[in-house]
Image (cartoon, rainbow, N blue to C red; front, side, top):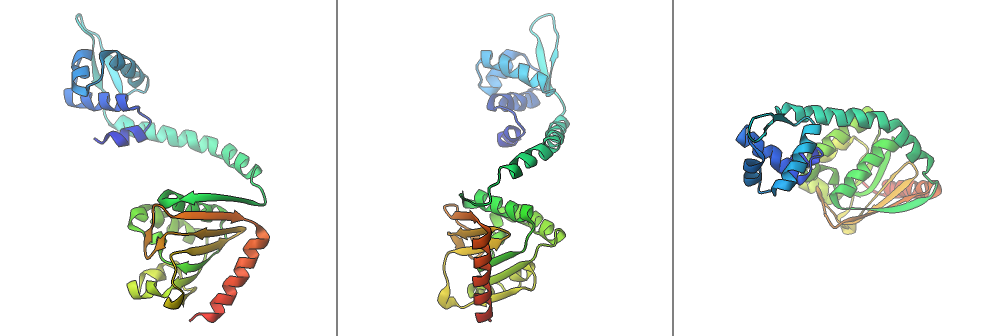
Length: 246
């Protein structure tokens, strides 16, 4: 089992190593756990206490040294569901506080693949049509395949439409994939090919660099501006370009 998965579920490094050690040992005392996990005995005691509190390990009382055993890994699914339930309970208040503090004008930066995911989340949250200049199918980067497929399903469900001016290289690269984004698309001549893209949705204007055909540069930067008047202006310029493209 990958330590990274256990850590994502909220276990510390020591807790994850000890739980994995017990899965192999089945039942063991602190000494054997320490040797197998390569963690100091004192730290083993602390981590085991936390694992017992989380319901992942239980104590077996014995005349000599007490031993410990792991709980069925299915318990990990319960932990995940508990976190989801807790987050769902907190979400209305979090969203209320988030929206309350949103200014009518603001500017900020996203970076790399994770930043691009944040941009996709913003599109889903705002629920307004997306207008893109210099589209490069970045949504189809294999690195975010599962995330983007879910986002595209949600976009369709929420009736969000794309209006895209693709770089002509997109058509040369693949004649079908750009059709995933609906029927509202045209192509910009290769004469104007760049590594940048502009997207407008709602009150947001997003300028991003490091864009290539179906690829997001991890060093790429997204400059996000929220301003209603500016977004309306960009949409007008989009229409100007749209009328001039095939």
